[in-house]
Length: 126
View 1 (cartoon, rainbow, N blue to C red):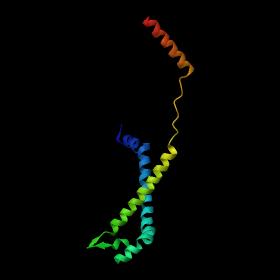
View 2: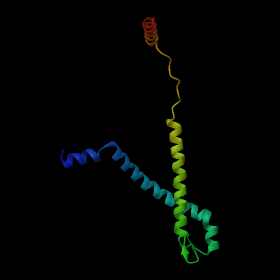
View 3: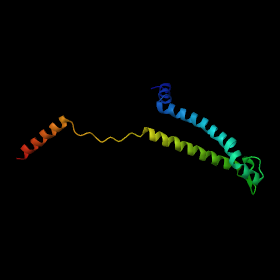
View 4: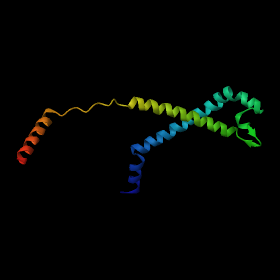
């Protein structure tokens, strides 16, 4: 098979396309979470801490000359993403979870075949 055909078979497999869609949606979701942290969480929850530290925004937080504000923002973003993904996966598992059905008993044909088998075994052992 030629290179072009092999590449086409690889690139247009369902798994590769699903992965591409997931990466694109993940990047967009990352932007949403970054905006949530920088525009909502930081002003609402971290303003008292920022004012106490003498910083105007989270990126300017420092301790003994070490700027830890961006790291703190990244940790908050990660925790938000992890929490949302946990909720999404938990919901998806709940939706896709099928009720376990007890296996049905043997059909009439299977019962008859079992009786015939047992009769043949008993004749052979006599």
